Image 1 (cartoon, rainbow, N blue to C red):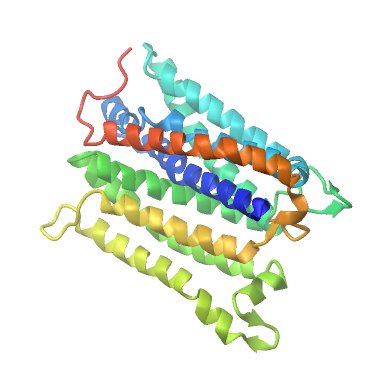
Image 2 (tube, one colour):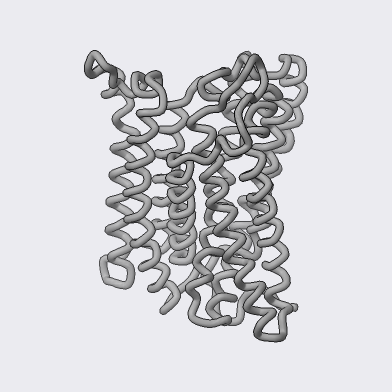
Length: 347
C-alpha cells in the first residue's frame, strides 16, 4: 500500500473541499460590499450562516494533514509563506468576529465598520490564498532540506496573478451560490455578478495556465510540449481537461444569461457548473505538478513521514473523514431552500 500517495490524495481532497465550500462563502462576503442596503446584506449573509464555520474544517484538515503526514514539505513551505499565511489567518479571524458583531451593532458608524470588516476580511483572505498558491507553484529556494529563500520570495508577478484569479474565482462561486439561494431582484443581481466574474475567471485561468507552462520545462513536457516539438500522445491524453473546463464555462454562461427566461435551467445548476470549472483547473494543476510536493525539489515520497505513522493516522482519518462528510451533507441538506427577507441571524 502506497501510504504517502494515499495521504497526498487525502490532503488534495481536503484542500479542494475547502476551496469549493469556503471559497463560496468568502465570495458571498466580498459580494456583500455591493448590497443595496442592510436588509439585502443580511439576506446574503443568511445564505452562508449555517455553514460558513463548518466549511473551514477542511482548511484545518488540509494544514494539519500536511504537518503530520509530510513534515519535510511543511518545514519548507511554511517558512516560505509565513507572511501571507498569517495575513490570511488574521483576515479569517477578523471576518469571523465581524460576522457575529455586525448583527449586534446599533450605531451606524459601528455597523459600517463591521460590515467593512466582513467583506474586507473575505477579500484579504481570498487574495492571500491565491498568493500562497502562486508561491507554491513557482517553488522554493532550498539548501539541503531547509528553506533558504527570503521573507518576500512569495511575492512575484505570477503570485499576484494567482491572487487575483483566486479572488475572482471565489466571487464566481459566491455569486452562483446566491443564484441558488435567493430569488427576485437579489438573484437577478447575483446573475449579473456571476456573468462578470465568469469573464474574469476565463481570462485569469487562461493566463495562469499559460504562465504555469513557463515555470519549469518538466511541466511543459507533461502537457506534451517541448523544445523538440509536440508530444502528441501526452497532449491528446490530457487535452480533455481544458476542453471540459471550456465546455463547462460555455454551459455556465448560457445558464446565467437565461435565468429569468422561459428557457432557464434549474437554479442549482450554475453553482455545480462553477464547481466543475474549479475541479477541471484543480485537476489540471495536480497533473502539472505531480509528484512534486515541494516543486521542484522534493516529491511526495521524499517528504513523507514513516509508514507506521502514516498507517496509524490513516486509521483515524478513516473514522473522521466519513463523519465530516456526513455532517457537511446533513447541514447543507437541512438548510436547503431559498432565503427569504427576514431570514438569518437574530440576536
